Image (tube, rainbow, N blue to C red; front, top):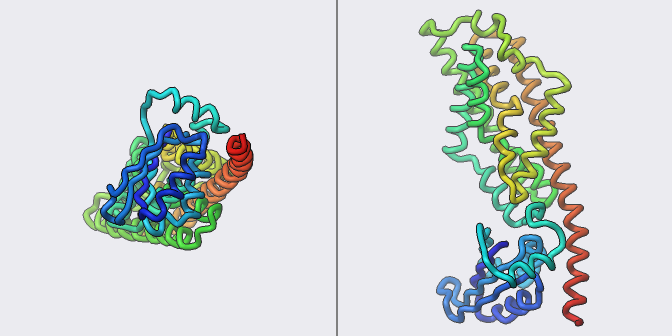
Length: 319
């Protein structure tokens, strides 16, 4: 169940109420006349089955509500309502499987913003990965994977392609590239400082590393794991089930590869730099392709559901 809170000019309120009152997936509807101060107008609040949100939001966009007012979409964690249950049963599909595209797109823009927080997490994760490589410990490698924030920007690339948002694609690509470049360069500087202090030697970088050698030796499984993990991650982001994201973070080798690039550059181990660059590229490519394919499949499926639902709503109106 979702709650829609709409602030709209008074001239649009009747049209908004008509859209919402005619939809069988709307279980409750309230209009607060004159309650909105900015923009001057009214506030409309509605509870709606999650499966029907896209259709209703699209109709509100056609009215221009988002240009002259605002539409807030909020999840309802718990609810008690027979009318709500009836509305949910009338909406085709499962609420856990449904994709609210407005929510997904908004999250994609937020995750793709290149800001101080993103750069900080990316750099800290990459430095921890470099330390893990020096110590040859998988525990720190896993910690670096979990800390890395790159998956949001990777998923945003798929959202941009599926929803045809060129600005989002450019933003996500910029954040992804600059985030890795800055993190790698700062890790290289930290590695040079550690080498000057005698804390890290060339042998630590190029010597046998049975626990972390996979970082610069990609194979077919690197791509396969990236594809499967990204598909699971996108499903977690677009559905009501978010528990799968932690598994994504500890499955792909993007941040560890970046950490090894920075470390190897500082000590001139160019063979490891090339292997790690390949590992990074394989993982990013696999995740981007899988994210796009998963989102495209979801859009295709829910487009059919939306068509079926539009016919259902039309029949109910004629009844």
